[in-house]
Amino acid sequence: MTLIAWAAVLFSAFIASGGIYDLLDDPLTMVPAGGGWVLVDPRPGEQTLNESLVVMVLTMFMFTGMLVAHRSTQVVYDQKKANMMLILGITLILLGLAGSHYLIILKRTIGR
Image (cartoon, rainbow, N blue to C red; front, side):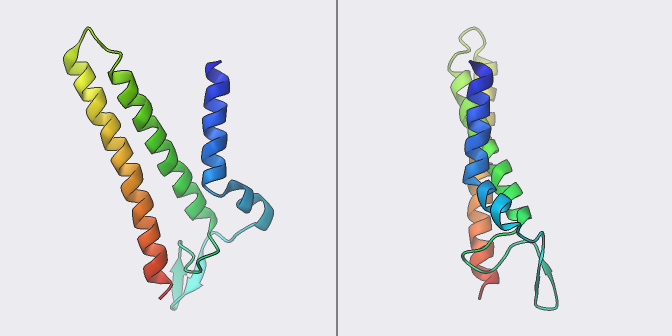
């Protein structure tokens, strides 16, 4: 059952990061812009392969953070361990959210 659950989580992260788009459209890794190369495609409806990979990693950070925070509630014998697990879980969730928000900001500022 655990293997099926992890497969479902990985598949969901793959879908959320645009994996189907990557398979069907074969996007570029980098896009030329302003005399150089950028890793974030400035066009609103497009994305690079690197964007997809970063979004997948950030999504997994958020999921792992939720899992670690949930596991911290099940540690009843060691309060210090439970607190550290909760802090780690919250940190991973915030890191994933902040990274996703930063990618959105990058996409908006490069496109102008």
